[in-house]
Image (cartoon, rainbow, N blue to C red):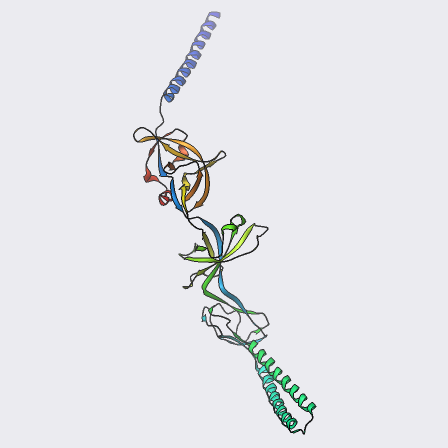
Length: 366
């Protein structure tokens, strides 16, 4: 019995030892295989760091505002007698748009004009008598005061009638009528909107850090995301204070809109175009990598044949414009930087260059 137990233990030990030895041998062979194996070169695309003519700008979001635009309101209450426009009609300054019932005021005006005529006649009579010396000066003064009062009453009623006849204050396009014939309206009721669409203003905001470079007269370009609208204009005003809540400064520009494509209230992308600068080193934005250690790029170094190596270089990045980014420190003109495929790289890695796989932004920047 003891002999069988000893034999079993020996056999078990041989089996376990063989398994452990085999695993150790296998792990060593695998480690030796990978230790002696060179990784395959990574395919990347590159572009040169160039000293270019830099066109800096400030990107912002804006809102279209008509150069002239008002909500037309009723000046005097009453019943709507005439509506003399339809939605989207082109309107000329001074054109009659709405008539409020004015029968009572016209009757009052007729009475006032009759009283004025009588007062003028009496004033003329008293002037003649006073010149002949057969009338007291007091009677002439009374007649003159009554004539002045009668004229003022006529002028007052004429002004009331003008408030019943509503006209356009400027040229533009009128909106949808908001009142109906026969409707009783009160003072201040809005009956339509009138917008001058020939010129458009764009209101946008810039950070307070950039307000020092924003000046009246600087060119701007605007575009809409819902149409192919593109236009250029200039800055016409800058708010002389900073919003304490957002730390932004409101800026207004004016752009052309002769075809009426742009409408008030529309969302726009705005770019303030700053003076150009020469000799700015720039690379495609896709070449820049950011981490906790800072911004860096991979730069191509020498190699054998088509295979080359890369070096990770930390840089100081500056302004962005379109698909390019300014490099303030860390690169020299002519350095070849990797703009695609760098997520699989490390310092000293072997690469092959294939610029047919370059991202569109990098191609546009070259």
